[in-house]
Length: 108
Image (cartoon, rainbow, N blue to C red; front, side, top):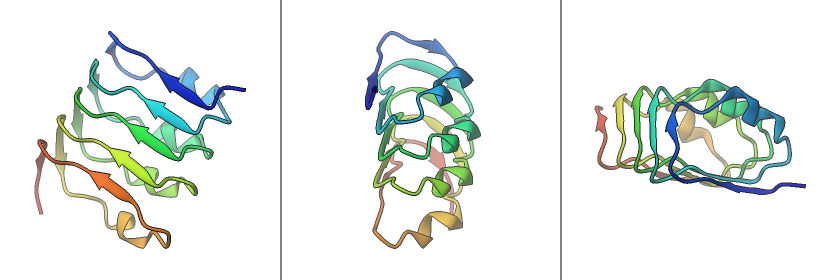
C-alpha cells in the first residue's frame, strides 16, 4: 500500500502509469525538471489529498479536472510556467483548498 510518493532528479513529463497507484494520498514531485502540461489523468487518482508539483517547468493551463479530486486539500503549483487563469471550478470546494500558484505566468 503506497500512500506517499516522492521522487527527485526527474525530467520529462509525468507518466500515465502513475494512475495505477490508486490509493496514493500524497504526490510530491516538487523540485524536479518536469516539463509540459500538468496531465489531466492525475484526476483519476481519487485518493489524492496533497499534490506538490512546485518548482518544475510545467506549462500551459491548470487543468480544471484537478478540482474533481474529492479529497484534495492542498495543491502546490508555484514556480512553474503555467499560463491562463485559475479554473472557476476551484472556487467550489466546500472544505477549503490551499492553492499555491505564485511565480507562474497566470492572468486574471
